[in-house]
Length: 113
Ligand code: FES
Image (cartoon, rainbow, N blue to C red):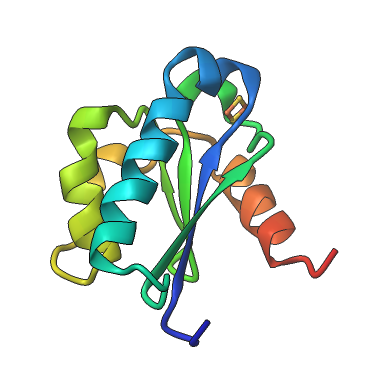
């Protein structure tokens, strides 16, 4: 994994799962693996819960520190462009959770434990 590799976490918590995070994870992962089979550019993983449950489905992007909320399958083409460096951050999906929740999520993701 290079320093340029983006690490994407799709929430796996109860609320996000009820809103379809399983399909979002699978679809995003499969699309990106077709383009980037060795995960050189992007890795997609699950995360137990970010604490912004009412705004799910939540998806984070590191090292960009982007916190996407209310993500649906229809948003994936724009998110994929961002992840592959072909488009900007998808502003309409950001800024929905409390900034403290975002900070806490990225602090946990940065933690080596
Ligand atoms: S269930 Fe997704 S943020 Fe908690």
